[in-house]
Length: 124
Image 1 (spheres, rainbow, N blue to C red):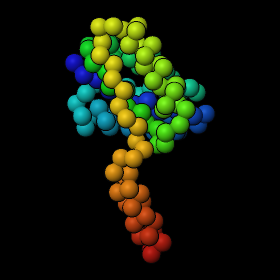
Image 2 (image 1 turned 90 degrees about the vertical axis):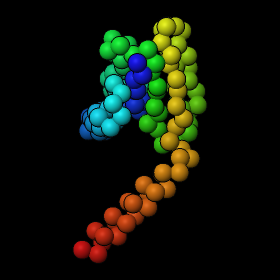
Image 3 (image 1 turned 90 degrees about the horizontal axis):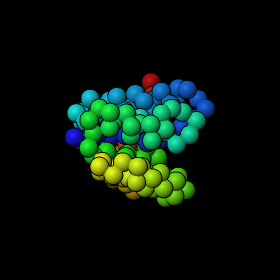
Image 4 (image 1 turned 120 degrees about the vertical axis):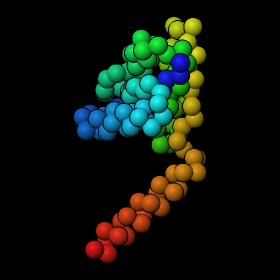
């Protein structure tokens, strides 16, 4: 069974972490895949714990979805290292790392949607 973990940096602001968790809930509802939020630091659960939770729910394949906007050291160095460690620790589970959000064509559409919303607000 395939499962997802939405991986974010983590924040000192609880509301920011809660927003990631809520997005994970919405992703699970939309996709039908078991989904857990996970964080690099400053929030729980971390990625290893989220993977354990998904395995406990029956996952045999886990796709790690970086919820990071721009490529940087966490996406290019830290996350692949953690995923490699998880693959080693859970050899019977296929753990895959999806690409980050940077460069996805839908980002321009999202930004334009925000522009239109800001213009509507300004016109009120």
